[in-house]
Image 1 (cartoon, helix red, strand yellow):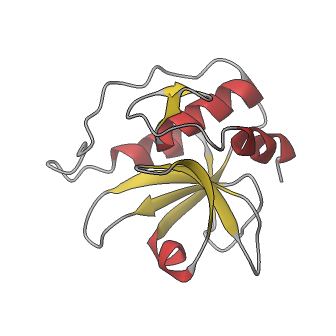
Image 2 (cartoon, one colour):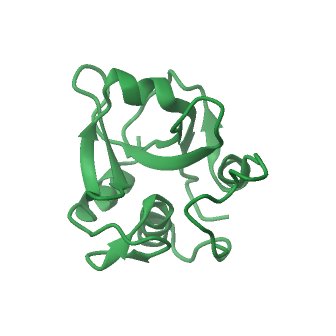
Image 3 (tube, helix red, strand yellow):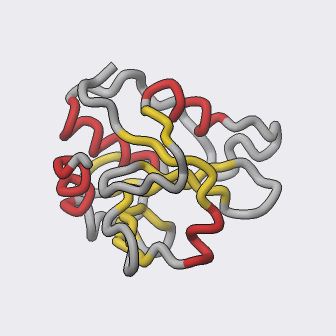
Length: 145
């Protein structure tokens, strides 16, 4: 478990949702939250995030976010939950995976921190509907790549 990851993620709670942003207290989307936590825990981001639209990857069906997560994070079994893990979600069956969150509590009463349109950065219950959407689980590297 990486306590620094979860502590950092929780410090972003209350940040408004702003597409493509990654600035604590000013604005972030789900990728921006992860980018900000990376900077706080590991230093400089490994690559600059390209511009992306809200429907990115949907027209092509490419798993762009999943591929990037595999390149910079360590994939682990979906059932091996630990606080600070990065969760990748598929929001609709048959669509690309394009939502991210950071595991908060595990077990009964599980939670995750994420930037959610219309809500900003929040810690939400990892309810059964959310659990069913998880397609991959990752952990941050010990040091930046």
